[in-house]
Length: 242
Image (tube, rainbow, N blue to C red; front, top):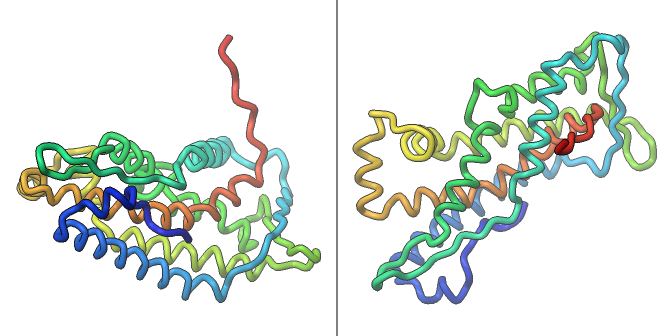
């Protein structure tokens, strides 16, 4: 779990003290969340594991919707940046986030995985589809895990994945993604109109962006177990232009 995205140190040094104080506050918030996640997950961590998928009814697994979900999640996750830096710049003695278009793009890329509950690649739906295999509650297929010595560690991995989901949910709930996606980036809900207008005109929206982008590295880390689970099925080769 790495440090939050940050701008160039020289740029930070040139920022007004009031701005640096707000950014320090965001960094402390991120560090506290990382510490909380580690305190929960580190005691349950398992080393490198080998996953084995045993299919009891080959003609029935995976069903088309599960295959599409796995492929969709893998494609989206693999294209997410895991090392994104914010940039600041000065225009007429005022400081702004200078790569705002990239910030908006990155935040939008995370949306189907962490916020859109109706999307099949939403993390909770992926969990509900694949965790039962690991928990041996599926009659069609079963996922087992073994450590570097070949010993079975399925139970340990199951506890770690379950705890990771809880930490991921708590992390997402800690932030204001509803405001960000429904009031700023994707939609313009009436319930957020007054706040959006105020945040935009006062510059507070810069900190809203900064705070949520800073959370993405931790969220990306917490999503990774699901990429591993869906990767146990074979994906087709991507077709080329013809």
